Amino acid sequence: MGNITTTGFITEAVAVTKSDSTVLDNVALYVGTGGDLTITMKDSATDVVFKNVPSGTFLPIAATKVKNATTAADILAIG
Image (cartoon, rainbow, N blue to C red):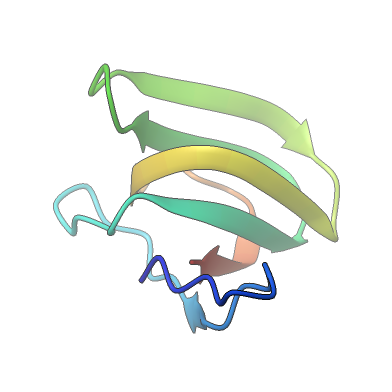
């Protein structure tokens, strides 16, 4: 992931499967169906809970994991 073209547009989006062990490649996230989003932040390796994320939200964060505790769904890794 992390494919940004010279035009500045992101060129890749991949469906995310919630997992406490699967490591993502430092991605931003899109939440299709709202709920709580529990992620691991890249630099601090700290788990953070974004409460009540609305459907259709882009989160410009550096996430490395989407944890099983997440109740949001239809999540895409954007890179």
